[in-house]
Length: 125
Image 1 (tube, one colour):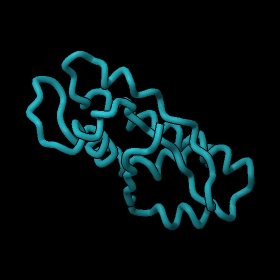
Image 2 (tube, rainbow, N blue to C red; image 1 turned 60 degrees about the horizontal axis):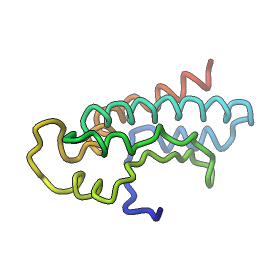
Image 3 (cartoon, one colour; image 1 turned 180 degrees about the vertical axis):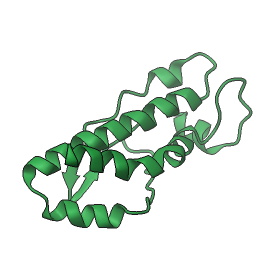
C-alpha cells in the first residue's frame, strides 16, 4: 500500500545525537537501533490509547513499529495505520466518543522529549 502521508518531528539534541552516531562503532549503532525501537513502541502504544474507536478496526490495523534502520546516518522507523480513512480520522477534528484526532502526532509530541535519553541509555548500556 502506498504512503498516504509522512510526518517528521524535531527533538532538541537530535542533531548532536546524530553527529555522535555517525562516528559510533557498529556495536553502538546496534544499541541505538534498540533504543529507537523502544521509543517507537512507546509512541505506538500511546497512539493506540488515543486513536478513535468506534468498531476497533482502525486500531487493529496498526501493526507494531518496524525495527528502525540506518538511512543516511540517521535512524528511521515507521508507525502506521493502514485503513484508508486513517488519514481523515487523524487530520479532521471530528468529535469522537472514544479517542481523538491527531492521535499519532499527539503521541509523538508527548513522548518526544524522552527519545534522546532512551537512545543514549541503550548506547551506554
